[in-house]
Image 1 (cartoon, each protein chain N blue to C red):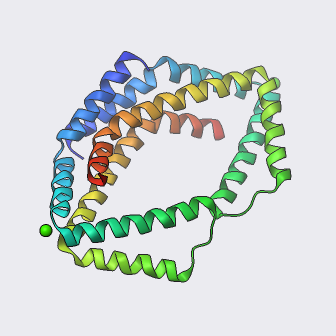
Image 2: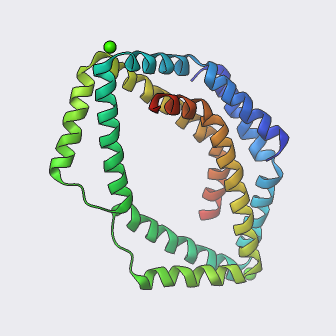
Length: 117
Length: 117
Ligand SMILES: [Ca+2]
Ligand SMILES: [Ca+2]
């Protein structure tokens, strides 16, 4: 990677770290971590999601019971104020990262598109 | 997204577009496009890869014949000088983009890691 690209990537990292969205995310995580109930629900939900994701990657079928179990865990998590808050901020942060990714990938995307025509 | 993040993402886009790797990639694509044989092999190989990727996403099994077909297409592509060159530069560009992505994602990765401990 060129020095210019490296420096810009580092500046971007620093700007992400200092951004309101990231600071809010960090705070929301700490709030959940400090709350035993919220934290237990969070780890349960995350483990469940990871298991389902693993199955998808492996091409293993997911049973209706497993889908229901995940939906129930999600509903429970949404009812917990601190978890609902964390998930909302996580989603916002994901969108910011996706936007950055899209802007950075644009030259490549344009090149591929012009080539596919 | 904050103005600062947006501006940095735009600067990164511009730096990627001006980078040697991207300019070389663009040139390698044009070389392939100008060569009927190379371009036909390229589109055949790309379509084959997309079909296999679709099957993976759908959880559809891929037959040994399909794997062999893809491997043969890859071997043929590697024997074509212009395609081999394009694939080499594509791989280098992918690594640059992955490095940028990793640097930008570091604050989030650190946050998730500290939370999982
Ligand atoms: Ca407590
Ligand atoms: Ca020709």
